Structure formats: C-alpha cells, structure tokens
Length: 176
Image (cartoon, rainbow, N blue to C red):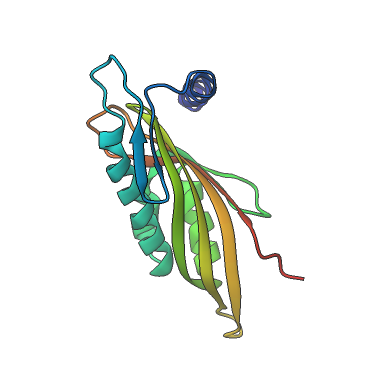
C-alpha cells in the first residue's frame, strides 16, 4: 500500500503544481506542439512522441482484443477505471477486467488525441476521444461507440518507457 500511496501523492503533487505553474510543460494539441522555455535540462517536448506512441499501442491492443499486449502498457500499480465498474488496481486486476470486457465485446475504434502534456520527466497526461463500433459477441449486434478518456502516464525515470498509471473513460454516446 505504501508504493500505491507514494505514487498517488507524487501524482497529485505534480498535477497540482502544474495547474499553478504551467511553465516548462510541453503540450501536443491536435497535431500541434508548443513548448514554453525553461531553465532546466529537461525538454518536455522531446517526450510527447513517446507518450503518444504508448496511446497508439493501447488503441491497437484494444482493436485486436489483445489483453497480453494491453496489460504490460500499465504500470505495476496502474488503475483502470472503466465506466460502471469498480476500479481495477494492479496488473492482475487490470488483466482480469480486460479479459472479462474483451470476452464480451470487440472494438473497432480510433483515438483522437486532443492533448498530451508532459508535466515532468516521470508524469504526463493525455486527453483523448474515441469513436467507432462495438460488436457484442453474444449476439453479433454492432453499436456505435464513442468515449472520452483521460490517461495519466508515468515512468520510473526519464529513460524508462511511459506506462499507463491511471486510465478512466466515459461514454459520449449513451445507450438508451
């Protein structure tokens, strides 16, 4: 529990600091990249592409229903917060959640990456939207899919690969 609390504290502190002081962040917004100047050696803009690559890998894993490709994209203590479900905390719970979900549906979606903000060498966040089709495996029915997503990306240090620390989504196309 200490590692989880430590990561939570670190994430919260970093995000709150970012809201107060926005300098030194790199932002990719709908294909454009901007960066404010900073006096440190850390170059946030240099890390936007690798964070975006993680998001594209996640999108590919979802579309392939490949749980074995999705789970390693999460941090060891990652949290998956799917709509209408309790949070899945840690890779074992995340794997079980994805196996259950992807055992019932197939997705054919595309992410629109609205922004990727690198907050520090070890924390970034991304806001995305996804649209496409969900196939219900039980009956073959196809329904239009639309969601908005928020990812908190983390890594051990600036040389490590980005992982999903927290992920939450909600529908933009409720089924009535």
